[in-house]
Image (cartoon, rainbow, N blue to C red; front, top):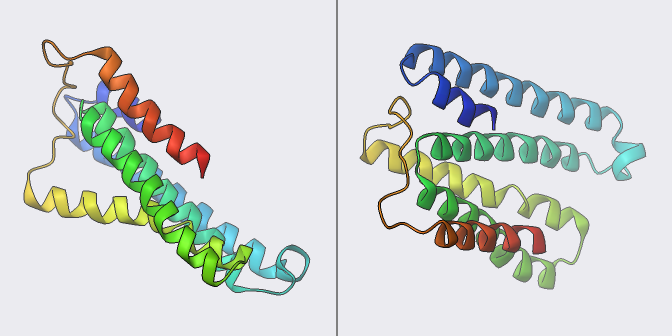
Length: 167
């Protein structure tokens, strides 16, 4: 929400917007690193000594932090189809990987390492997409196209969110 709001309020200040995004990215990285360190030092209590789960916790924060920044950018620039597609890609890819992994290695440890994959795929998709086309972050938010249905938008995003919540 903060990213969406920043894009909307700073559409005439691309440098200010970049600074806001950098501050958010720094917070996400600090939180991911901090969580990894704290959980590493408490791994015996929290994870029965399985230290790699401290890294998985940091990976979850880093990938989901980037994922939500990307979704905020999409919403702020009116790229609602991309927003829905990103949400669906994250959820569906996670469940498609989680099912076979849990059939082969039914453990919370295996699932912990699957969880960051969905948002990581969205980050890679977004990075690739931005390299193909110029960024639209500084552009004014787009209104819904004439004839576009609020119902269609809500159906697409609600479906994607429902898949996410189901997992």
